[in-house]
Length: 626
Image 1 (cartoon, rainbow, N blue to C red):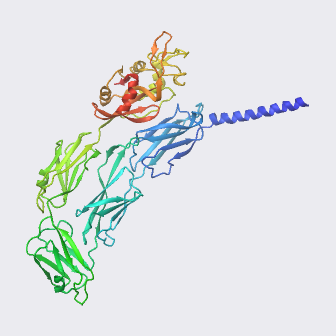
Image 2: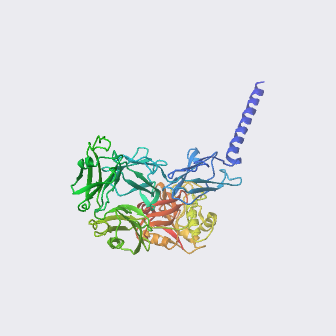
Image 3: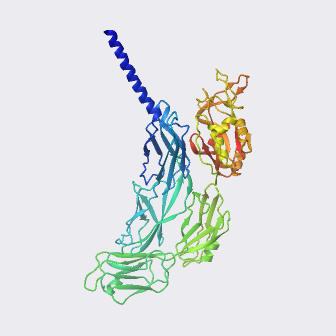
C-alpha cells in the first residue's frame, strides 16, 4: 500500500514539472514579444524637446535581429534595459538624445525584426510617431491695445503660453526707445518689463517680442546653434496721463527742438491761474496760450536744447473755471531729440552658434539718413553684401554665407546723420558663427550579433557607396580563427575573426582587426587598412565622401593580451569595438567633434578629445572605403 502512495506522488510531481516547462517554453519561444507600453504614448502631441523614448516588451527580445531607425535622425544612444535575469534577456529599449530635438516636428521610430530569443517564428515590425511640442508663444500682454492705460512705474507683463525652457530665448524692443530691465517669475512663464526711471506719461509704446531657438548639447549644456529671431508678438500699450490732465503733447524722448508743448485738462481752467502755477525746468522763456481754457500751449521764444529732458509742472492750487482747484502738483516730461543712437543691434555681442546665413540688423532711435548709416557700417572680417531698410531698422545681408566657426565684429562708427545731431558714439557687437558640419548620408544600422561590430561597421561604410551587403556576406570573406581559447593561448585577430561571433567577448569570442576587414571590403569597393593616421587624414577622407571604420573600446575596457599557438603576442583589449566615422563638426584641418555610427549604440557625436583618446587605444587604426 505504501509503495502505491509513493508511486502516485512521483506521477503528480512529474505532471507539475511538465506543465511548468511547457509554460516557460511557451513564454520564451512560442509567443512573439508584444509592445506593452511606449513612453511617450501614441497620442502624445507635445513631447518635450529633451525627452527620452522608452519601449517596453512583455518578454525578452532577440537583439540580433532587431533593427532600429528614427526619422529624422538625431544624435543619441539606444540602450537595452530591464533584464529578466542578471544582465540578460532585456525587455526595454531606451533612446536618449544627445541634443535638443527640433520643436513642432514629428519623429518616427521603426522597429524591424521583432522576434523571440530563439527566433523560431516570423519577425514583426512596429512603427510609431511622436510630435514634439512647439516653443512657447506669447499668450497675453498686459496692458495691450484693449486695456486701460498703465501707470508710469507699473511693469508690462508678457505671459507665455507655458514656461520658457532654456532653449527658447526672448528679446523685447520698445518704440519709442526706453531703458528698462527684465524680471522673470519663478514659474518661468511671465516676463516683466520694468522702466529704469518711469514710462513717459501719456505715451503709447509699441512692443515687439522676438524669439530665438537655441540648440543645446544635452550632455554638456553647450550651445550648438541659434536660429534667427522670429517675431511672436507686436502690439501697443498706453501710459496713463498725469492726474487731471487728459492729454499731453509731445511725449517720449525724441521730441523735435522746435516743438510747442500742449496739455489739456479734464475741464475748463482759469487761464491766468494756470499761468501763475506753471513752471518749466530747465527754464526757457516763452508764453502760454489757450483758445478754449482747456488746452494750453507753451510757445518758447527760442528752440529747446538738443538731448535735454524738460519737466513741466502745474502746482496745486491752479483754479478751474468753475471755482475748483487742483489738489496736488501735476507734472509731465519729455526729452528732446539727441544725437543718433543705436537702440538695437543683432546678433547680440558675445553670441555663439550664429547661422552662417544670418543678416545683421541695426535699429536706430530716430529716422536717419540712409547713406550716412551705410557708410558708418563695418564688419570684420570684411564680407560684401547689401542693405535693406524698414523704417528706422537697417539690415545688412551678406552676399554669401559667413564663414563657419569665425568671430565677426560689427561696428557703427560715429557721424550718422538723423533728425538730431550726428551720432557721437561707436557701437560694437562681436559674435561667433556656428561650426561647419560635414556628414555623410549613412543611416545608423545596429549589429546583428553580439560581437559582429566590425562587420556591421563595414556594412554601413559600404552602404555609403551604394553597396548593399549583409554581415554574413562580409564574415564569409573575413573568415574565422577557430583556435580554442585555452589559458593564455588563442587565435590571431590580425588574420581572421577570433572565437564565436555569438559568444562573450574575451571569453568565448573576441573580434577581428583592420587588415582582414579591408581585404573583405575590397571585394566590393577599393579599400585601405591603415595604422597611425592623423585626425586630419581621417576627416579629409570623410570630406572626400568616404566613410571610415575605426577601432576603439566600448565602455570601461582594459588591456587583455594573449599569445597564439605559434608564440605571437596579440595586443588586445576587453571591450574592443569598431565604429563608422560618417562626419565631423568644424574644419577638416581642426575638427571640434567627430560623428560616428556606433553599431551597438546608434548615432553618437564625440568631442575631438574623446575620439582621439578612444581611437589611440589601437594606434589610430582603421579601414577607409573609397
